[in-house]
Image 1: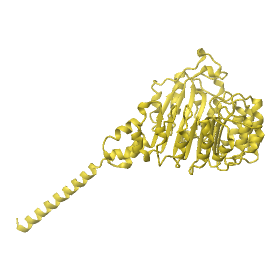
Image 2: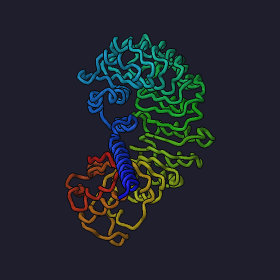
Image 3: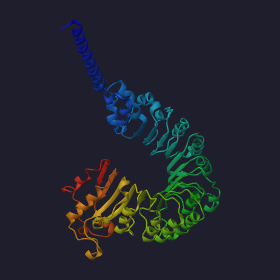
Image 4: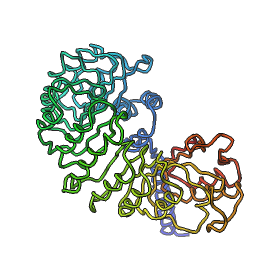
Length: 475
């Protein structure tokens, strides 16, 4: 072998070894990357952890502490259970990370009222007793966007309304179980809101309701209005709703002591406002008027006059076949529907919703007889439905027979049909399957339907393909 050939061979081996070592080093680099070292991945994981798990993560190392501390303290709830309440030192050390804080206690402790939270967006003070530390807590946090209050002390109410009106970024206000004797000051606070919830709020009146209602100014910014619980008469409620022309969502529950005769004239006023073009942007209605008749609900739905209705909640009402017939016009736009505890609806109505509402995302209904599911009909909502609450009856519906178009099947076979249908809802995230409740339908427990069997071969296992399902309950 010549010297030149030997040199070439040595150079070739050296080149190969260099390439090999380079390749192995690159491989080592690739293999050494740990996804938990990437802050963005850790942050995404942290969004799905509860507070106890987040607290453990903060103690792993300094990098993990920096990632998980903002998640741990961004949303806080101060309750009567002292073992879960962070110390005042911990709160002060993490003031800049707190974006939402809720006080579910007897009173607001003076120590908490002196906190300075520069990035606070949501403040909830759902207290059992009135205390004078509430108003300073609100006044010291100009960054608040959403505020919820209860038990405001009598002497501080007018000052509180003025403080709320002075918050530069306020968008939403919730008042709970509150007596209000200075209406004018409150309206000044409301005039800058986009969202208002009045839950069991009592108003003092000087003079009749008509005079008080006329003093209400229009609230052009309000988009979302909730009035629930007992607190004021229905005429005043309708007057307030009418003064908000740009509403997109209304939730209205009248006083449970009102009868249909008392409610209907005011509901007719509401309907007439719809007919005459009020609330052109309305997309969501939650109407809980227990004594209003089905025909009046039908008028209300018809008065929407081709508006883009996407959400409807009429649970615990007499919403029935007339109103359901009017609702068919909006099947193509409905996304959220709650018709729980509407005794005038039936299984055929539920089946219509499942087969004719292509954009349905959330459905809450009473029972459906499983025999209605035993068809080849396609459910367009199987590609969109994310939340379903329903009861299944495995018995045959009374007053039906094989001649009605459904095949006679055993309860075991219908059990399989139910789970097969549920197993095709691939976007489902929340599923609540109710047990048959005979008392709801005027039956005795001896007449109760056969409950679903989860342990059958084609029972609960049929849901294994629902990759998005993270909440399943029965009750």
